Length: 260
Image (cartoon, rainbow, N blue to C red; front, side, top):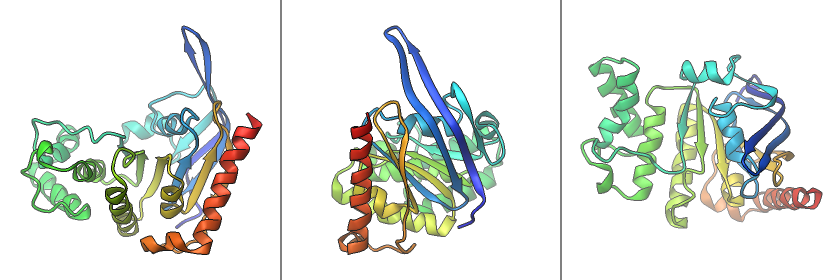
């Protein structure tokens, strides 16, 4: 993990204008995300976690402050395909096979057919879906569909992966398995990952850095640099060190509510 920031936000504010008046989504958010970081954003519903991720992706425009991604504006980074984005729902097209869904961005980007085939095979291997390229989404479980969605985001090999609660709708057993697989994938690819979650154990288990956010308007109440080793079996969640970090996250969430 490098100490070179690839994402930098400074004094970021975002206010949405609605028919019921302004909604203050983010307030004075400043954060550096370094190359190779796995950063989780956690906070109560409506605190701006997803909004901040969308600002990084150039899908929302801040009303104050600035943000850079790989030295570019978020819009420039989006147009140069500097990141892959995984949404809460897998969002696979039901009329395309799994391989066809993964190929779609590659087709749009103009990759040749041989290159498309090689990349699809490689990312299916990364997410342990070898042999499923000719299946349709409805033939896969929810967890497998999410892995296919991750594969699609990895297909054009961006250095940054942004993930908006990708496992939130899955049961705990499947979620645990995918958490393990995601850590393995991160270790193999060394990508920089921004990950939104509502789960304290998930945030602590996955992250090198945990960003705790307050209720709206979303502010950062704590940034926790994890001392846990990069290789983490699931049973690390029973360790005293893990529990101590989880307590600090919980205290940060409480402090945010108390300040509101």
